[in-house]
Image (cartoon, rainbow, N blue to C red; front, side, top):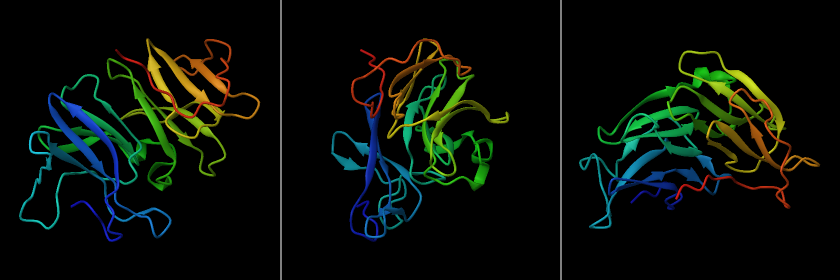
Length: 218
């Protein structure tokens, strides 16, 4: 029901809130280098009927909450708006799940590189508990390294840390400390940084280079 022209439905993540569930429809052409073939959308799942909820039954296919971007990378609950989900793509989207609508939390032009950035550059993000601080991890334009930037709806992007390496979602925030799983050759391990990008502790080895990082919240 969510399949595109390659006849495969690509789903990225699932999100559950107060008994409701959504999946991300992530249309790409696997026969053409996994290139995007349309915009992403969040599609609700009826958890009792185990069926997709169509927002526009009169339109062909299943319609969810259409997002203004492709290749969504990460999602997190909005820290100060219950029922809102933040989604990282070419910008940071604030999705109102109840209203089935969206607005920009941080628009693409407020990202490093602006609207000219490659859609593959953004990698991960965190937002402070009060919503005042947003930090993103993204590749440089030549994909040679990963940088951490402070961004916001009405501020110029500020470079916090450069020269990092990662393969997946490797940025987390806990108790005002940034944790980043760095895969740099000769310097792989867990880094601890302040919200201003200052080093707070010596590099902690993880044995093998870290692939992804997540905070355990029991």
